[in-house]
Image (tube, rainbow, N blue to C red; front, side):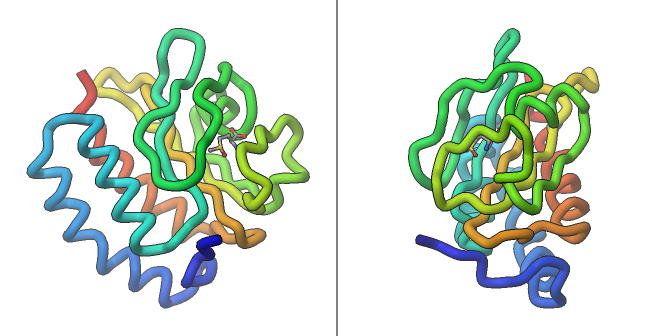
Length: 162
Ligand code: SME
């Protein structure tokens, strides 16, 4: 079971985000296809941090539908307002869940998930069009450093939406 190699808000995690920044920018500058960009986006984060599950859900009507990801099999559809992903979509804000067992309605795709962060992603019209979901096997693994770095990276996907 992969575990995060850096800890929440540590200088090592900041340094890891700093190191992957140029690679992520290059990757997104060279690829205009959303799915291809999401696939490498999740792979790069997985390579860097070793989190248990990293991936995207895309808005399709009244549901989120599974997109590119790294990690074990996950549920393929999540309703508006359901689970952490559906809540981040409904509330239009990044959600950090330090203990998934204490989040009412958490959708348990894997017994190894202990904490989670979900970042909504807007399309060019400003509507939520997808979410980035990261699950860690480490409890309370996400902090302000992750929120800022991941929100900034997710914003760079905005021009790739139709
Ligand atoms: N835990 C999520 C569901 C998706 S999986 O973690 C990949 C949720 O509650 O929305």
